[in-house]
Length: 267
Ligand SMILES: Nc1ncnc2c1ncn2[C@@H]1O[C@H](COP(=O)(O)OP(=O)(O)OP(=O)(O)O)[C@@H](O)[C@H]1O
Ligand SMILES: [Mg+2]
Image (cartoon, rainbow, N blue to C red):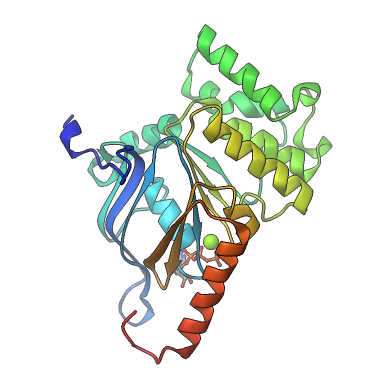
């Protein structure tokens, strides 16, 4: 493996995931939709990055292509040094299973399994045996997400916030290189949402994990170390040390600008 090509951000931190010149076109000819129009962006290891932008700007598409859930029309997506386009289906499935974690808006838990079984499901499916380290890691996770007294409950017996905390624990259980979350607080009340965001932040700051989160919510984005902004399938800005107010101002500026820009004007 050629580590000399490892992409690093401005502070010299390697990227856990990145895309280069990413183009994604859905459909063909007159029904074609360009969801990503040449996006290059890295998600540094050990950091929490939020992806923001108007509805339809390509946030979910970027996340799905970066995570190997969907393929790019052109350009390249990497997890670490592994270029996803170079993998056959089997290797891609293994990469998704072993190196990437997911949290979705709909919690996507298995209803017939207990909380404990849901959390360890990815490793159980992989036939991965828990070594001492792995046992300690999942044990710590259970405390972090505050579900020790719910381990033998089934998802239907939990609140939405508790279910999403199970999904967060499951995403981190296999110690993946990067956890992708698409609107993880979209179905939660603000208090449960804050809890889930707090967990994602702790996973990064206290446990050294990497998180990439799509969100509409400036308050949620303020939990990240950096926000990247998409518009019309393009990367239009990045903001370090975001606060909810700064993010909101940026989004407003953006709305005014696009509203006053004539069709087809260069951005
Ligand atoms: N499977 C698909 N087939 C055709 N077009 C699609 C498909 N998925 C997304 N699109 C289109 O691609 C563009 C980007 O969609 P995407 O879901 O990435 O946006 P988004 O930023 O996540 O939006 P939202 O905030 O509403 O979730 C949109 O115009 C959308 O209609
Ligand atoms: Mg989306």
